[in-house]
Image 1 (cartoon, rainbow, N blue to C red):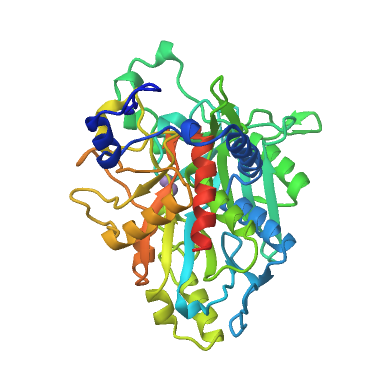
Image 2: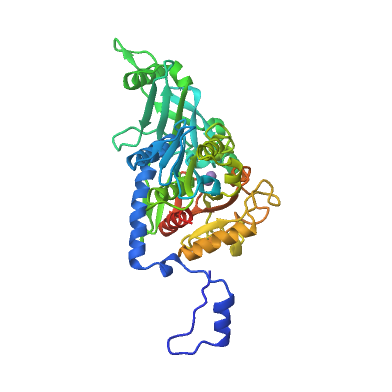
Length: 476
Ligand code: MN
Ligand code: MN
């Protein structure tokens, strides 16, 4: 990204320079447009974000974290029939996996919402309902991967186990093993190179295959009267001691293996954060925090939805391809005596999700003129999709123009980006599901390197820019 430099001081600008300034779109690095105090504030914001990343590695933990924040700030549970008055702060907790947070505006909701939508699920390895088996003096757990992963990336890294076991009587047993430095970790094994000649001939997508994503659970048998009496029994005994559960209870559990390492700074200048699950917590956190930071009563009702299941197509009752958001908006508007369909038609929505950042190591998949770059600000993505924009919500030019103006007026550094070269691949976001509601929606988010890897990278200044963008949007 070249920058057009004006001539040195004391020199008259040439006609060509003046024309360039007037007509050419210039890209600027966030460090150029932010002063030192703003950069320090952005870095400080990202410290809070890192705490969130470390405490909220799953959709349930992210929902719990943000729900606790909301409650502490006076948000109350919304129920159908409630009448939201200007300044009222409310939330909907959808099955502990998705959240809606709202601040009622001065205008009735029928005048249209300012809605942001991000997702709080990330690719991972889920334990199968019947996971445990012993083989050759090891105890392993079978997994079924969740979302679009490169399976080979998940072998030979430390994993932690998060989730819940729900017993027959409804008792919810939360599980988190592997986050405390003193905790044991889990691991998918990989083959040693000495014996990997055949494996190395596999294509990369089969380097580690789905049924090879087996997690080491243990290696010692239970001793009863000094006699070894089974390896799996030992693990079940430990689980029973710690959680009061049996193998039957694992059937109705949701246990997710995620990378066990914490978020950290990346690069000597500490300009980036490396962590698991930044897609899409890197957008969920700014969307929620910007709502929490609202001062006074916004003109329009500001809403943030933090959804589950995006990584597998937004299906399921906690994903956005279902009615929970529509139901909330309907109840909110009906409570105020308005028409929900009119409210939806008047609603503006930012679908906050990541886009791929240009990676100089893999330039071939990008079209550089329409790619997003780290530290050039939030990326606005007009459309996603694949094979000729199939399956996308292509935002209208009118709405893009409105958003562009909003960002410029608020001093938000932004860029436009596509997801890679035409016909190189493709992807999607919840923008499609939101567009079904007959509202205006466009994708906005943070450029990411190594997306969907166990360790994803994002630039701190872009993250802070997204928070600024959300604040301006809620106040518009
Ligand atoms: Mn995403
Ligand atoms: Mn994703």
